[in-house]
Image (cartoon, rainbow, N blue to C red; front, side, top):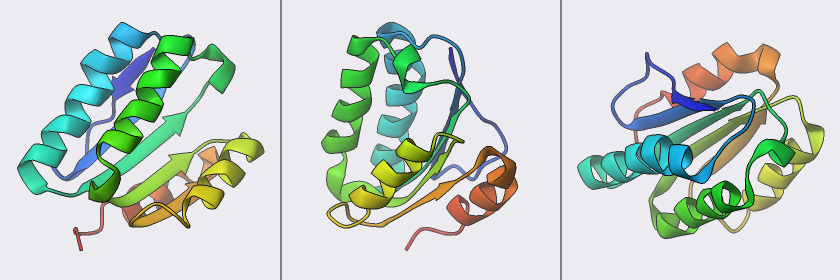
Length: 123
């Protein structure tokens, strides 16, 4: 299941994933919000709170996850991944080189710090 997280500035697309994540739900919730932020602001601050394993993303949902990342490649300003999965934190840190903007990983216990960081004004 994916759901938007409330309480962020309009230029932040933030969502939480828990349990099984399906393509239709990901498109309807996440991709729609990312597209909306990109259209309105031209840049995107993005927060993903993973309370599930990536194995719970259906293959079509995972492909959409990658698709939205590349579709807005030049528009990423700040991207925060909040998860206790160490391999996901490392993967995002590796992406911080080639991807424009800043990428940081946080553990679930650091959620408030991630929220504060990703909510900083657009560059």
